[in-house]
Amino acid sequence: MGYQFSLVLNREITDEEMVTLKGAIQAEASFGGDTLPTDADVPVTRIEFDDTVSPTLAEAIEAGFEAVKTVPELSVPGLSVPAQPAGPAADAGAGEEAETVDVAAASDSAARA
Image 1 (cartoon, helix red, strand yellow):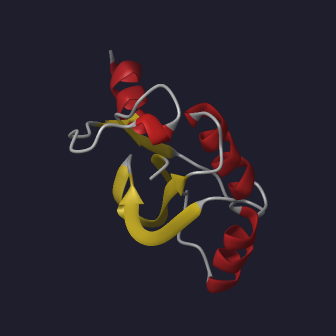
Image 2: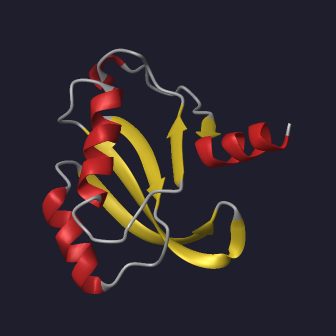
Image 3: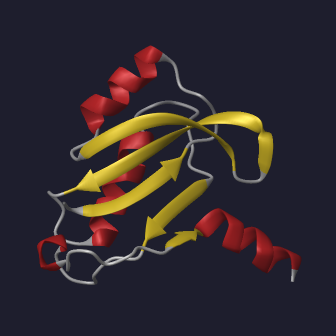
């Protein structure tokens, strides 16, 4: 198990775009449906990452963003990162319960304050 996080894309992707993304992503990734964090009526695609290649969480997330840039007009309005160790993922303790931080929701709350 590596660094885990998910990216919510700005729209649903086509099968062709999924093939492009799979080719650009260096980590294990699964694709699924979701809704836009700021508007539950807008269907979007969520990519769940399990990156065992990148040396740090920051580099894993950056690689995910770079992969998304390979598809024109695709962006990332949501990032969710469950709690995980600051060091390499191989040092993670088994059985620890994860807490998810939704960056898009946090940003929206901060903007209203």
